[in-house]
Length: 123
Image (cartoon, rainbow, N blue to C red; front, side, top):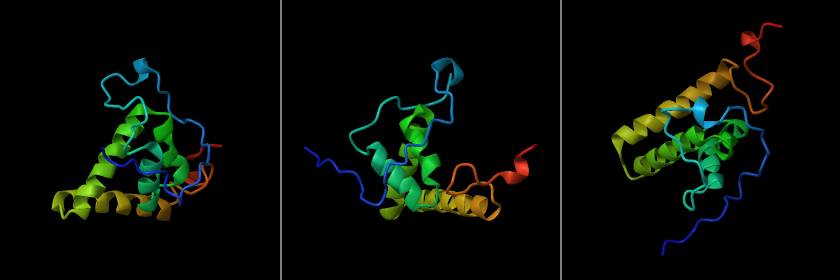
């Protein structure tokens, strides 16, 4: 039996509220994983996303939104493949890291949910 990896110590639960509507009729045709997996569990997925630059409050949406969990698992697999030397996987991971860094630079995302995206608001 495979060893179950415990929660990574580097990420503490933020308790971020859901930001997506996860009702089935709102997500027709979207791939999703409805329940937390034993491995990789949600904490490992969140830790992987945060380690690569996604804000934690955003990464925590995997707890609430099945399509977000599916995307996080796909990213986690790409990270594993990249670590094993996969060129295509390395390109996917590098693109995500670049995207999060660029969104931070343009202040479209931030570590605090209500910061970032100021230029999009129409107050």
